[in-house]
Image 1: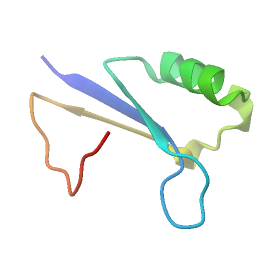
Image 2 (image 1 turned 90 degrees about the vertical axis):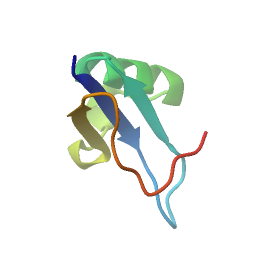
Image 3 (image 1 turned 135 degrees about the vertical axis):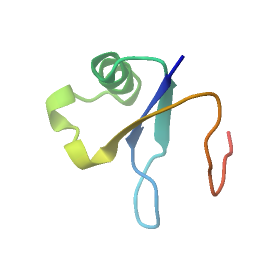
Image 4 (image 1 turned 30 degrees about the horizontal axis):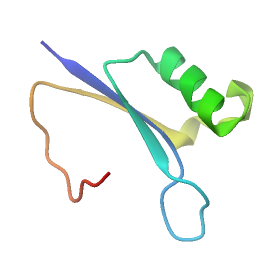
Length: 66
């Protein structure tokens, strides 16, 4: 079974906030939940702030933290 990871938000020097990551949630639902927690409108979230990829049961990462 393929898993889907959707990340939304800022990451990097000079940006406020963090990325929120949703596992096995549709892009639309992830955006709805992100905006509920960040008090924004979906239309305010720039497309380049949304990442999405699928994977089996593992993937490579440079760093993972919570």
